[in-house]
Amino acid sequence: MLSEFWRDALGGEWVCTGAGTPGTWRQVKPAAVTGDPSSGTIPTGYLIWNTTDGAVKRHAGSYSWEITVGAGTSAKVGFHGATPTPQRAGAAQAAVTYVSQTISDPPTRAEVQALNDGLVAAITLLNELRAAAVEKGLVKGGA
Image 1: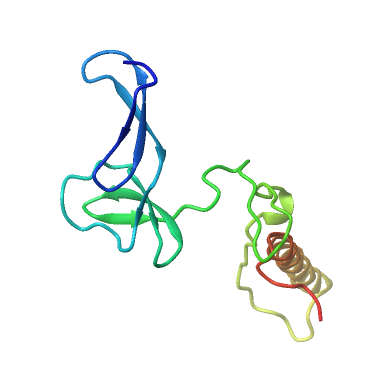
Image 2 (image 1 turned 45 degrees about the horizontal axis):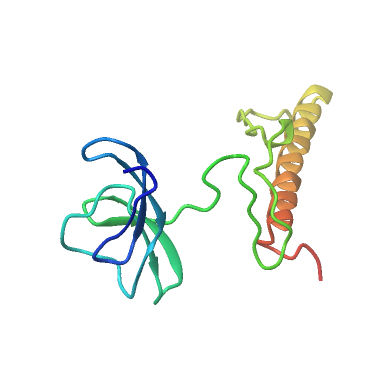
């Protein structure tokens, strides 16, 4: 029956979202447990709230429990009081490529320019990683 409510043996709460036998059920509240379940029949995707470690976890199968923070790129995440923001994206995150080369003695202008360009790319990426870590609250970013 649609909108029917059910609480399972671990305390997880479910609502019927599709009529039929057995119907379609969606978990609406994780089970509150003191340890990660390691026996019994637990469906993949089942949610628990482990009150011992404070984490909400998802059953990945074979009694493996996952913690996901920011399930999608638009999910807003923040740590240590930082304003939650979606995942950053942009050209500043491009991987830095490095090609080892023999430098002349004295180096040519082109060799010095290539080294400078590589350094600029590495600093750009480093600054973007720092900005992302500060924005998320993973590091303070200053004294």
